[in-house]
Image 1 (cartoon, helix red, strand yellow):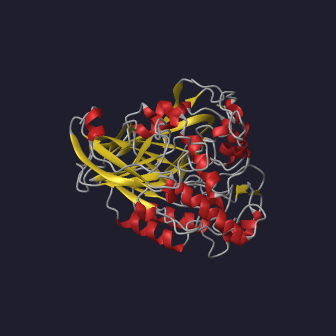
Image 2 (tube, rainbow, N blue to C red):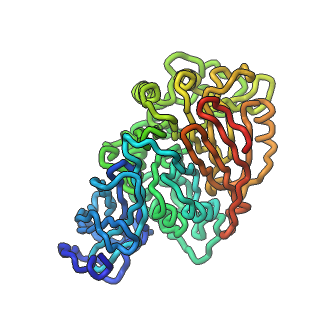
Image 3 (cartoon, rainbow, N blue to C red):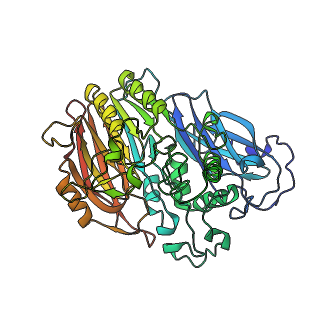
Length: 504
């Protein structure tokens, strides 16, 4: 069905709204692919940088279509839904009844306005035995630190899914010119100088990020599977414990606002919808028998960081029984899933670095915010990985690239790895970065299982076959100016039967 036909479909009368203003300023997205379906997302906001997006406090009818072709000549699914004011006029459509392992195109309509089209891809059938899977990992896209050029390049990759591993937005102030972007035409309102804590401020911050055309292109090109880290709420928060001095009750209100805005602005299914300050985000996606992907949450259930947080020489508290990064329920769910998945590969898509990373000094300083601060949970996961071949940990957070072998005992560097970890650098956070960073060289000296480090910006592109993982570290020369070319800085491979990252 072409554009004219889509406009002719019946649609209930809209509540009063700016008739000439495009409500689809934030683009479209899809996510969490299943063999028979995918989540479709958009949000109506004709004036996106205003608290209500320029719409009155009223619900709006929205129609949607899914087609086999980009011209929408072969419609396979369509329907109607509501953009509710209570949820920031966001739309979440859980489409089912699609064919497994194939591309589809989708779009939305409200009134006389039709959204841009997006492309998505369903997962292979549960009983399928795929020969390969292509995915990327990305994280940490501070709007104030640079341009999303990496996402424009990512939109051109042929991927089955993008795993976004946290820090979709940052809670700090944004200047009127967008910080390091120095975009004089932007002229953001003064409200963006406020740190996010209310629901309106979070909605406006997501709207700012989503007005970026490169971010919109990446969302429209491939289904995303997202999890959060800390900056979606507050830097280095732990469960109900804020980093800064805030009354616990007030922080839970802050967290509730952050979680609600996160759900409103991401392609997530309704079972992920938050209830106050709680939101069940961890989940599993299956890609036939080739890979099961576990989307983890290392913020909501963790014990507070040991010894006051930070990078420390000595911290006996980190070894206390009962300290957990995942929480008992999520940890049991993950370990049982890994042990019984039957997939060739188990992908652990999560936030903070799992490999031991020593920062130098006689004792070798460790970061209490990472898995180094929670050795019991790490030992449980790597113990399971030692019995179940094909574990790959996918990580964000730290704004550097790492290729790491994972050992059951990091004090014995000559023991064979039981799994591997790919840590992706930031998309923009930290600015332009550099290829060689002295701090990273020091870490490699004290942590010989780190096979590669790099401080540039970009993402990691991966391909799984039945027996091999290949990872390309894709990097930019700069992000404080738009238009950087992208190159592959390094490539590593690991075999399922004999894990360990080696240069390709």
